[in-house]
Length: 552
Image (cartoon, rainbow, N blue to C red; front, side, top):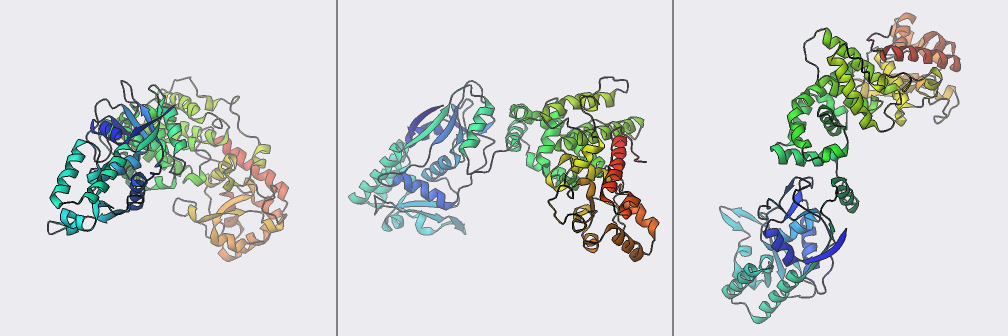
């Protein structure tokens, strides 16, 4: 990386020639009036103040990113010389101010103070076809107020001629002309430093440098890059496409990384791992547009399948990989209701739960998901395929033992195994202890994580790892959680049976729907209860990880 400088006049010359382009992943113009005023005053004052260094990527024969021109500037060349990675807001403010390009702003600088000049911005509008404020569009009235239009400071011969004609029109005095000349010289000769990344710099390296130099801004996301690629390649808006997907699949909003989900599914369908390197390829946006109908189908059917498996959103997903792998697999399955679809459902169920319970995706998740997706898709398409994914390899990716299940912590701490345990318990039905409602997408987010053996009856410390176990957790309504409070299991179960007028059998059924062993719970021995529940969870886990729909 090399440090250099260019004057504003030199920058404007390259912009006029279309040689400066903005990568489309750059967010659009966002500066307010205060920042525009500030950058102009820093340039115009004596001595001038810095406005910060720019970052550019030198372009060779082929642009590394899809690009666009600076707002208000001439169209970019087919072969721009640089991509402006950092400094878009500053350069846009300078260009639009000095070329009088703002539709809603008119800018002036006071001619009275050449040391600490006062830049003034006014809102511009029209009333009955007449530009407002009227005085701001009348050179004589502007001059009488002691103001210089910022556009008269534009570098170059055109700006010089415009300034001379304006002064002649208003009959400007010598002092005014001298002030105008000094401001023009300061603008033209103001040096803007920049760091230049050489031709051949890898895209990922350029983005890393860009992100590190933009510590005060929101981090650049993979989605931002693909938005630009897709728009540049086919003219469609990925934001609009995502909005339509949300309308067709409202439940997608519960998977809060839904933009990443769509990209990951698209990458797998394009035969690529869901990694930044894949998204950086300039062909990815066009490829995503081509497979988008399949992405939509996969997410719609995948989310529906996840609901059937009692995974209603991020809160219940043991791993993000399981979500996008499931959706990518459903994208390739015809909606025909035949035995083929039934076999696919079993294979995908097996993949979902093995992804949730094994350590397969703890490392290099994206590349492993890519490898597994290829083999799973082949297995679904060809019933005679013997090329099993590593995800199904019992030796490489064993399921947890009962002892490991018993060590799993509280599910709110993003513990993968803990979430998988809660997921399996909901998969059994998850009927509320009190109101008897089955766990569903409509009510599950109103439920709370409940200590089956209350904290007060054990150590009294919520942080105690002996108490904060996934096997001691059930999702119940907040009202049920308040009713149970610190009662012993035997007491609150007796109360439930009395309140519901249903008797022990119904309460037993509701507990069984969480894979909670009723007899051991009522007996009140915590360790015995944990052993019994671990055995129930393990049995259900193995059935699901074999692709079976029933837990019985």
